[in-house]
Image 1 (cartoon, rainbow, N blue to C red):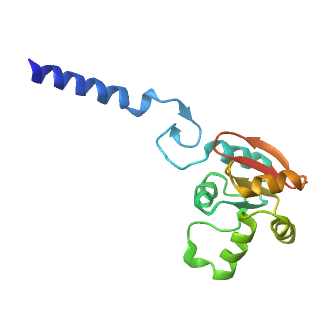
Image 2 (cartoon, one colour):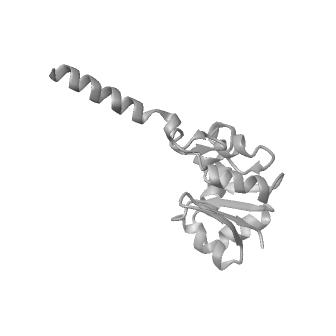
Image 3 (cartoon, rainbow, N blue to C red):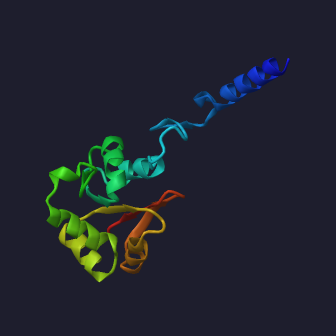
Length: 144
């Protein structure tokens, strides 16, 4: 009897964990199946900057390239394609500050997507960039 109870309990846990019980997401299918896919930010980017230049975290860039392919991204996860100078510039921008704003303007970046705890958030707020979308994952800023 104990074996039957354990088997039934495990079966019930499997049924509860099935993906169709999760809420639908327009990009990922079901919420929670992809662990590092900022779906809300990608949807907002589709409307905010189609064809525009986008600076985002390197870890999100490949996902965003798939979800919003019309935009042009600063870097993506294919790090071997970029010279070291690109990643040096990426580091300058990611750290925030006046140098970051100057580089974003020099590169004619139209939109920035960052995590809520990134140093660049305070810099963009102070430089007059507009938050066009925000959720728990991050924020989308548009050039002033």
